[in-house]
Amino acid sequence: MQVRTLDDVPASAFHLRLALVAGGGPFCDGYILGVIGVVLPILVSSFHLSANATGLVGAASLLGVFIGGLAGGMASDRFGRKVLYTVNIFMFTVFSAAQYFCASFTALLVWRFLIGIAIGADYPIATAYVTEFMPRRWRGPALSGLITFWWLGYVCSFVAGYALLSFFPENWQLVMGSSFVPSLVLLLCRAGMPESPLWLMSVGRVTEARHIVGNFLKADISFEGMQPAAPAGGIRQVVGKLCGPRYRGMLIFVSAFWILQSAPAFSIHTLQAQILAQMHMSNPILAACVVTCFTFLGILPVTFGLINLIGRRTLLIWSFVLAALSLLFIALWSGEAGWAVLGAFIVYSAVEAAGSGLQFVYPNELFPTEIRGTAVGFASSASRLGAALGTFLLPVGVAHFGVRATLFAAFGLLALGAFISWRWAPETAGLSLSEASHITLS
Image 1 (cartoon, rainbow, N blue to C red):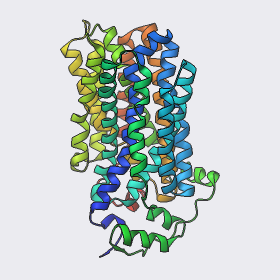
Image 2: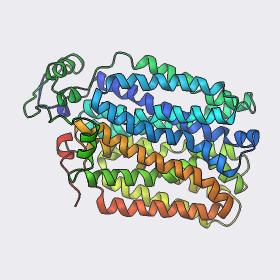
Image 3: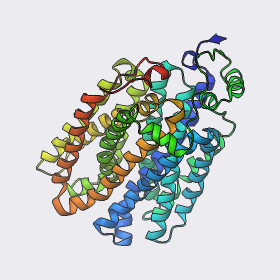
Image 4: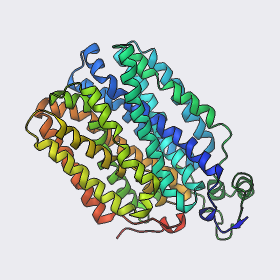
């Protein structure tokens, strides 16, 4: 079938397979990052952790994500998406198994840091892969769908962790090592996936690109106007282009909104059980599990079309506004945690998850193929560095200033995110990749 560009290829069974296999990476990411929130109270009592040490164990994997995002993004632009797409999942599998054999707090920190590197590498690789295959109509839902998989993995980590601890009390190694199972399944599923045709085009391998489009998409693409891009060159040239006048504003915008979503979110979700315990909630681990399950109230409508219906810009602005107001309500609550506080946490989780659906959408749409992976890697690394700082500082802040003051600080970050989104968020719904990557910020 003759079609003009990859943006116009009809959705097919291959696209569904691609979305599901790509979603396995964020699922494992969410599971691996989330499971620490289940066992953290046990780690605190087992290793007699101080507030600083508690923050460090929550932040270790996020610091790894910072390095992995930068390295994975630049490597995928340089060497392609396909090989790295499998290698980083192999790292998931090995490092997940290693957590089961941890005998010391130091060993746990090392493995959490290394597994974070693998997680960080998956963000730019998997999202660029989906972006470069998916038709324009399904690009937004598919990319936000990756966040849905992330939340599914995150919720499953709480449910599985709570169930495992019910049968094997205090066995935090078993809970941490349980991420080996989904990682191994995903490693097997990703075998045999093709290289991105747009990346092949960007490096001049037109014949291979045509072959993949014909075999996997069953379409005859017109490559007119899609001549190979000027080679991005080495790391210095790629970074120079990304940070130059043309893309610098977009890079600052996507990094800023991602940081301002992630810094409060990771710290609050990771330490939610402890926050609820300090607010005298009965069975705080179960309460945190229930709250986390409600993230799907926010992310599922986004994945099933809301992102196209109301647009990227409106979704981003209002997710920040509603999340900020939810935390403000909790911060102002003067009594013990009850249904009102639990409800506010549920609202926060739902709207924060809805806004997080744009974390993979904006960075992939606003940058061209030759620097897409590096741009996503940079933005995701910046966000995880902010999240690591937030996760480290939250228990310290709670210990020194109390829960209420710390939640006020999180409210301030979200309010800043709402302002930045109102001022600079562009609208990319309905645009081709070429059109979206030519948007400039005023």
